[in-house]
Image (cartoon, rainbow, N blue to C red; front, top):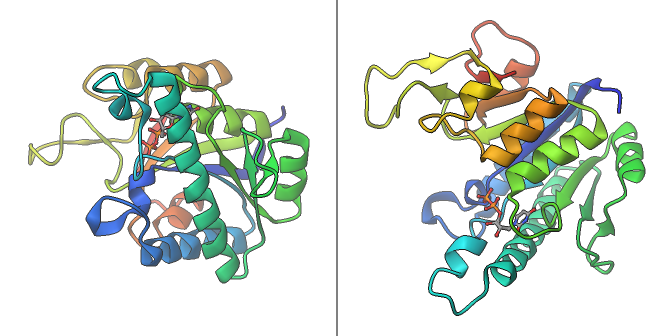
Length: 239
Ligand code: UDP
């Protein structure tokens, strides 16, 4: 798939939607994120979105005491991402942004099935496409789903939206002298102390030469600044 410069995929964790309470969905946060996405669309970008499910359930935690099997826990996690996708769809429509949800697990009453050509067509028409249900397979994460979908649709980058400015050499919450790393290699990103994404996601990005931009999505206007290559914009890029 040929890369398209103005096509991006944004990956949010489920927790990003949860607001202060750390669980469920905060509609004000949804509205904020929808506004940010709208500003990027209005600037002429094509935007795809992948949202995690960690604000409801993660397979590993659900299976912790052995009562729920890991694979079932993972399917529960994938279902959680569908809840988040439907919520984000509402928030975007509320801002008059056209949007479609495509699910990796068939749920025809709720979402379209994932069909890459159709997704690309939506993007070309200016619609946001939210990819739900992860990769559709247990033992993967939504970060991996994000890298996979970004590669499939020919996005120029995956934006990993976080609450910090980017990747630091050490934990900025613990160390005052932590330095923001502007650019690192995929191999460096795989190191234990960095871990911007899980190994599978980073390895897939490396294989497809897909840049990973790590940035703060919770500073208003920041994402657009980064995309417009504003010299003051803070972020890290893995490439
Ligand atoms: N999941 C899965 N396969 C996928 C994507 C996700 O099994 O392709 C499950 C997995 O259990 C994961 C959960 O869905 O823990 C929620 O996704 P994730 O943990 O990536 O969400 P986030 O941390 O981004 O909120």
